[in-house]
Length: 402
Image 1 (cartoon, helix red, strand yellow):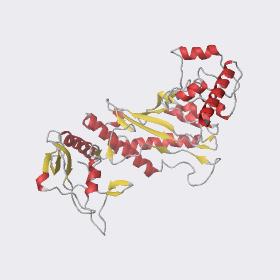
Image 2: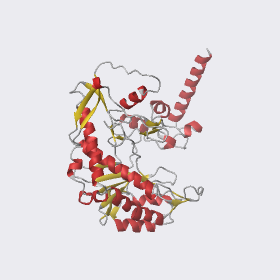
Image 3: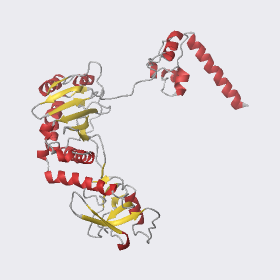
């Protein structure tokens, strides 16, 4: 009885509020001032308005303005009316915010922004035109610049022309090789950021507080032991190299540190491009080994079905990991040596690798039920853990490559 009474009372209150809104009486309160989500509950409750009075077609709850019935009906009946906020896309240029030009113009702009209020960083946005650096051979594109030093870093991307990158066409001639090459460059970019200290923000560890220096760090997706398709570094069909990363635009308090920004975009970033995204700056044999090794892994996996197998583990594989939180392979030390995998003779199969030019032997697990037995700490769970990520290619030296 109490539950029924409470529900009925709530319904009466809600109807009273709706009637008040239709008469233009307004409504205020803590819940009303923040009203208007995207779900059906909030649409039904608040008429489809946005958060905090920014709705499109509803009434502004708690902000002192009310839409009339005509506007509300038009909003709900017009199929072209926007009933929900658009998805946020940092690569879509802001109105009037898609600048661009030469690299020298970009650097001069950063100098002029020195000591201005932080939102002035929006002037450097260039999502489609880009800032062209002819000397280094790349174009820099900047998405929506962050509006606050504590907001998410600004997304940037660099496109290095094929004439500058000069990667051999064989290194990206198919999808597998293209993904492998992009993975290799992503790792180099990430490692170089660490070595140069480019991933350390201004004033890090100094405890400067709100008014102290902050930002200035460059960050890119951290690679794992797996070689999978990602968007951090990709190779386009024409051979151009596209790298996407974030830059936390530097500031002191809410004032722009223009000279620090010049150092990032005029010195640090060109060095990263030179060291990590150009073929002539890399170890050519390491690039080739990485790409061909990944392609051989894919080739073995594609041949399992033909051989009637569901899994394959090569002899000599290092299956145990450093720890439960570290996916790198376990290494030998003074106290113990890592036990490499060895296949039983009755289940051994072999593959002739097309790129590496060698025969790879190991256990072939056939379709059906396979029973793995052994004592405690003999590696049963270790084998199962390795098999459950067997659909992914691994980096050379991981121990689970094939």
